[in-house]
View 1 (tube, rainbow, N blue to C red):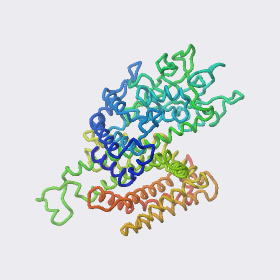
View 2: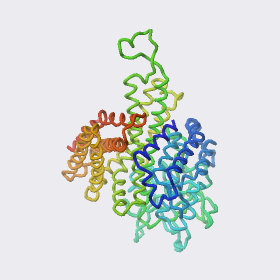
View 3: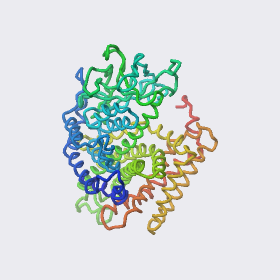
View 4: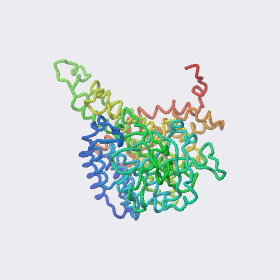
Length: 607
């Protein structure tokens, strides 16, 4: 499976995203296509040897608490050590931060291989995102000690947002941070505070992989009058180490951070999910209770900073969902090629004396496999395209950087939500291809489904992403994000029209884009926010399908027709998507356009 995935990734990077042109830019001068293929081959070997063989083990040998530590399987330790030795964490960072200045599209391709082999094995994505946030907003000492230690894999990182009473409603968090005495501004790591409160749903917040864990915690700070405001005002971001450190990064004493619960999950079981207490007096760091936290940036700027990390994590969630969709597709494809059952639907084939055929010869099995291919490969391509926008943000001209930033903002809800919904459906179909055995642990497809089910919740639920898309992203800057996306799609259509066989698909996509525009305008036509957002989720589903249709058309239009399995497979996936999937948008976009009030008018007692 991994070698076929690597070949597909190489196809996307070269034939579609033209990485050779990107590598001409000064930032990437140390890299060549040969060095990147070497990196992909190395990642494939690590994934095949250290991840894939233990994917089932980490589903059954779940994290356990021994009264002092959360214990992970030895296989997880070995996998973590292999990633640390590989040096992938800071790969896309600047040289001055210990990075390789690797293009993001190459780094994403590497992570796709790891995610497809064992998505729930290591806290690498959170650690990298945590350290990247500190590089963007932290002080020199915060970067030197905390971010560097995370990039080197000596420590791991988390983000702590949700609380038992608040969930995703960050305005309702109650964790508070108070300045730690009159001289707190003199601390070498930045302004020092004491935090009290509880956080939950924190991935990898306690484990035995590393001897320190760096929590990035949202908490409310008082305003100048000493009052902690309700709402989101005063929400600040703090570095809260599990163990305090000195100026050389050496561990000193346990911070007032305590594990209060392990959350047991149906999937994604290899990474512990926890509830933590900050400042309950379990420990007395620096002589008194209260978790020591160091302010990141300015007080009151926590949400903006945390969304820097969350947006990066959201793209990675989409990538993980896409990779799991592909893993299920590959497993069911292999099964369909070897499992014999039934005979062809021709008169001759119905002869019971004839041998049974592999089930891949049946049209409906081909349909289910083609759905999985179109969903998973299309989702991987979308994630790589967004990684390409990240590269443009760093290396393009001023206009290109701004355009990439706005496009990425607009697409972030889609790149998180679309793969997590439709690659979950791909996993569902993988189980169906296998039939009864797909519902047993004898094959991996049921675990892929359970693991992938979390991604619709991870880093903001489907509904939150939909509200972000329709409520903010398509209307911000007077709709500039939507206009820029339309320009990109129009450019693809113009290029695709050079191929006569793509003409009808171009017409179909043009109409679909118009329907998105009409749905957006219709939803907001009354200016009533409740009416506009009542059907945000179906709007996002329709919007996402249009984006994926565009991605598939762009892939096919950018590649030269050739009589080989890769290009023919991509063309078949595109034809499937336009014939079976794109027509679905009418219902989704229609209820948003017409502000259908069925859901808002529904009353509790009627249920």
